[in-house]
Structures are given as structure tokens and as C-alpha cells.
Amino acid sequence: MKKKNKKIAMIVCMVTGVCLLGGAVAANYSTANGYDVYKKAVKGLVGRDNYTMDVSLKLALDGNTLSETHTYEQADAPNGMSCLLEENKGISDDYYYRSEDHNQDNINYMVYTNTYKNEDGEKETNTHGNAWNYAADDPDRSLGSLNISRNEDETMKKVMRVVELAADTFVGDLKNNIVYVSGDDTQSTYEINLDYIQIPEIVNAGLSAIFSMEYGTAQQNGYEPSNEFQMLGKDPIVRSASMTFTVDNEGRLLANHGTASMVGIGMDGTEHELTIEANLEMSNYGTTTVERFDPSTMPEDTSYYDRDAQQSYHVQFDSDGNIVYKEAAESVG
Image: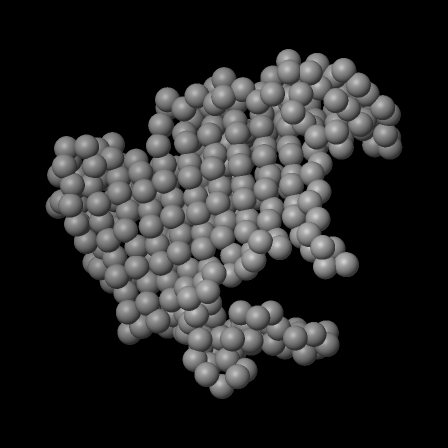
């Protein structure tokens, strides 16, 4: 259920991006409405079962990097294969998180690596693995973050419609700011650039409410707000936002790059700036081939949940995915 909710949230966030940074596509993209082109491209991502996706997100405060997140995914659901790699780096090398998620032969293999400073101030790295089997015809399961299961289909259609209507209302005349930049017979690029005056008032009002709630919660629970909240104060605003995107001649999204700048007066009485940079690259629609994962490389600390037996084990696999060592663990009812 956790993976399902995460997937729905991811899809909704991408569609909501239309109204945060933002029909049929005409044969000549240079004369098409940029907003409609983008909306169709984003909606076209939902339900994809074969693709390669590369996503990165970077946060910086006053020019100093706070965190960097990178996600790389290959999905080939028709052949029962997928691979999802995620990395997260903190302000320094003291924090690093990496996860791998592989699906093949109706088994899900997950490997987690976490590097952090322990109580003695020493750097420590822990790696562990989880694996579990599943039914190929499970109506609640699908491979790929953009893909949806049979049971999700109707719900997702309704959610998409609500989000689309909200986006159309929210964006309003801003859709005219999305302009054609360049293109050829294979692809076209659009962009939008907004300054403070063009940012919808509801965005800054929402930020003020969120930051004020953080301060209220922190005060109520007796802790200091996080560094970002302290540096931006209670009433930050979006100073600027820009986005470029590229679609192919079929209207499919190939690239999406967005930046935003938030400024506020911090608790130290001076102005600070938080910048957000997000990048999305899509490729190999319908032609992605996922390299097989070698299960024998799973960590020694690997837990395996046998769905049929409803039993957990500590296991080791060979390269074909056969269990060569198994020790019973806690039973799961």
C-alpha cells in the first residue's frame, strides 16, 4: 500500500506542476498553444509502462547546496522488469542515502545504503536488503512509477480530471506566457519566465501559511524550526520562476527543466534566498530494455517475505534468484 500511495502522489505532483509552473497538439508546434502542449505531454506520462526516466532535484540556500536528490528509473512492465535507483546527498558528505529497487521473475529486490554520523561523531554506513515475491496478475500491483494498476485506473482518471480543471482555473492568463522557442521535424521547445508580479497571489499566501504553521508547531512542541524556515522567516515570497520543456513530434515529453527562487527575512533580520532546481529527462518510450539484476549481490543482511507462506526469512540468493540459504524469522500473520 505504501508503494501504491507513493506512486499516486508522484503522478499527481507531476500533473499539478502544470499549474505551479505553467487539447490537441497541432501538427505545427510553433503555432500550438504552449499550455495545451505541456498539459497533454504531462498527462501522457500517466500509465506509461515502458520508458526511461531521469529526475534530479537540488535545493540551495544563499548559493550553498542543502540537498541533492537523483532518481533514475527504467521500466519494461510488459516483460515484468523494472529498475529504480535513488540517491540523496545532504549538506556534507556526512549524510548519503541510496536505494535500489529491482523487479524481475515476480520478485522485488530492494537494497538500502545509509551513511551518517553516529553518536561518537564517526561516519557509519549500513546496508541491508529486502525481497518479496508477488503474483504476476495482482490487480493492485504495477511496475514503474508512471504505470498504474488495474484497480488504480478508475480512481486515477477521476483524480486527473479534478487536477486538470484546477490547473486550468489556477493558471488562467499565465498560459499565454508559455511561448515556443525552437524546434524542427523531431522536437519542439517551449519556455515560461515569471517574475514576482506575475506569480499568482495564492502561491505566496500559501507559502506564508505553511511557514507560519511551521513556526507555530515548533513553538508548541518546544523546538526550533528547521534551518530553511529560520532563514526565510514567516512570510517568504516566490521572487521568480522559470521552466523550459521539450516534446517530440508525437507530443511526448522529452525534457522538463524548472527553477524557482524564494526569498524572505530570516530570524537574523537579513534577506535570504532559497533556490529550487528540478530536471526531468524522458527517453526510450516503448524501447526500454532493463538489465537483469544479480540477486547473489544482495547484502548478507537481507530479509525475504514469502507471500504464499506468509513467513519472513533471512536469506541469500544465487545469481538466478534461487534461495541458497534460509533462516526463519518472525512469522507474519
